[in-house]
Image 1 (cartoon, rainbow, N blue to C red):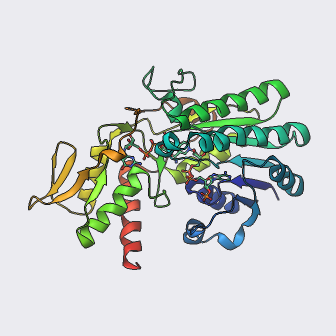
Image 2 (image 1 turned 180 degrees about the vertical axis):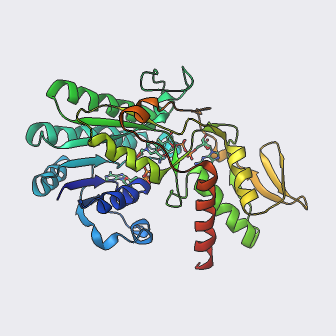
Image 3 (image 1 turned 90 degrees about the vertical axis):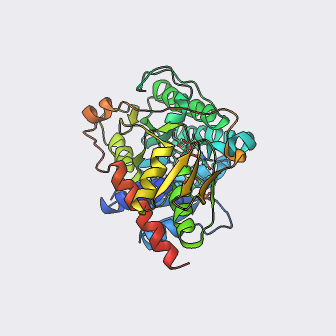
Length: 333
Ligand code: NAP
Ligand code: G4F
């Protein structure tokens, strides 16, 4: 039985990846840090909480990483833990860097020093392309990070490559474009929208958002975790862009959600009104960022060819999934 450690087990991708690996017969060790929130709701909703062995690991503590890897002796290590909210990284750049950069160094040092056979996956991101220098973006496109989050991820991306080349380790980075799902955190624009629109429908509470003009290449997390696994099953380690190759304006994502909910609406600039002229969505400047990533669209031909990976979901099925889940959750509030 293969053994895998997943950091970020309580996050969106952690849950879906754990579910996938369990279905393939893996023993899954989910690494969690201490916190006080409602942390297991995703594993609970996915119905896998009792099948995962939870281990304590904070990426900012080198000793606890070493201890867990020594004890588990994993075949594969998926590093999904991060301070993953771009907006927060402007306000908390130090903690973002500590976890997203030095946390990765801490893991790679343990693998290099004591566990060279462990296959390592790093969660890189399309945010690294930032102010894009080429469209669509592929593995060779130059990075131009636009936030402390993206700067920290560029560091760990290159570190993963450097440890592969310096020490012959099996390290892969997935440059994943935005991927969403019913398990997405409520602070990200897609989930904030699906949850917020359901709430507006039920209570009339106005949803407040920031810049709706940027474009994202949105996929479904369920598809994207499969690509992570495929990368570690190859003969040779490599880095891959994972994306759908389609880009959508945030405004159009919102429109699709409102259509799914059968709500007649009208955009006036960045704001949205119902058929009686009442607010559905208002602009709040506090959700604008100091620097924005305006437009992302990926070219995943390398992954299509080498990994034989293809997304199964479309944006329409993603929107449907997210809206249905939030309507369902609202019933039990
Ligand atoms: P997420 O839902 O925000 O999950 C992040 C996870 O990291 C949570 O389990 C969180 O634990 C954990 N974490 C945060 N700080 C930690 C620390 N100091 N030590 C240990 N664990 C810590 O993120 P996601 O959407 O699943 O994304 C997974 C990874 O892919 C992240 O690295 C993200 O940056 C990257 N990525 C995401 C996307 C995307 O569109 N989703 C695209 C490209 C790359 P708590 O529950 O305790 O907070
Ligand atoms: O949903 P977002 O916060 O995602 P963002 O910044 O693209 O980052 C996500 O995807 C990355 C992959 O490219 C990951 F690496 C990262 O960890 C994270 O998962 O924002 C998307 C867009 C931005 O342009 C933002 O300015 O939506 C805009 N936006 C407008 N109003 C908003 C809001 N974003 C948020 N979170 N909240 C708003 O009210």
